[in-house]
Image (cartoon, rainbow, N blue to C red; front, top):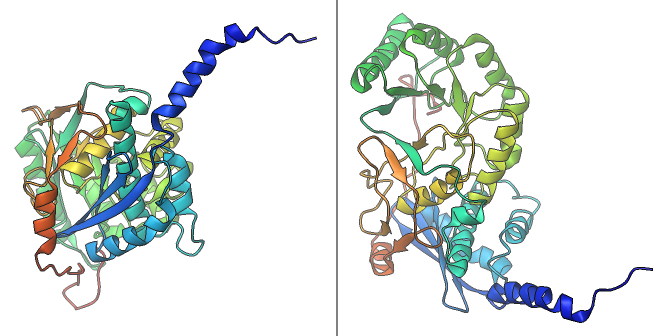
Length: 383
């Protein structure tokens, strides 16, 4: 016969559990407010207790992002913002025909980051404390004087010849000279160098000790990545255009990438970054997150990577106001002269958003221009 402990011995524990639940049980989402600023959309999630969180949409027409955020409020209205995984699943799986699409996932990324921001503020701790705590004290960033990524100079046709390869090799030579023998050199193929030319180029740069070749091919055909991996000995990296854990599984299973580059603003937010990191760890594959976000988005990504074991280096462009609109987001961290940043210290994401500046910026006429690229013969190119 199992004897139930006396009520007096249970009381302290039930009191503890009740107090934990009560900390956030009455907090409910009351509004979602999007702000359009240049090429960005900033999403504010408000609650009935005046605690709010912020997220950033990148890589998407901000006009579309704002409309979609307003529409998704239907799924969030009245929900407890600390049920982050539940709400992620609710939004992601709400509509079977747009599940996993880039538009939905980019906006969901911002909402997810805003929910983590709220939860950190409610508990009075940085988000990385909610992710198991930091595994490092500093995060290495690029570009810096000792770490620089060079690119292709534009899309290249399949008919690229020796001269085209030589021009790309010169870019690597010049970058190695720039950062020195102990610096990091990366090359961004940007899906714009056809496989035959990329193989020739990769074989020609082995002596320069390049950290990685980024985006060697357009996502979607794993066979191309397998072919390139078999022919290239320089480490290959990719992931900025892949979304959620389901987009990254094939790279790991086929062992055709050496480094994963998820973007916190593209792949599903902090929640998915953590899951992708766990998958990558099982294959001993480090993360080097892609990030063309402003101070808000980079802070969210830093929180995720602070609690990630296998990490290489993180992208960030603090002085590029195309990525980082001036005066909107205030951070409590700075990049030191060696290219490292200490972890954010404030509660939540540790970012202060100037809503007055956002309001004024959103009032300005803004026309989103769709990017694109063409080859010399007028045909459409990947870029």
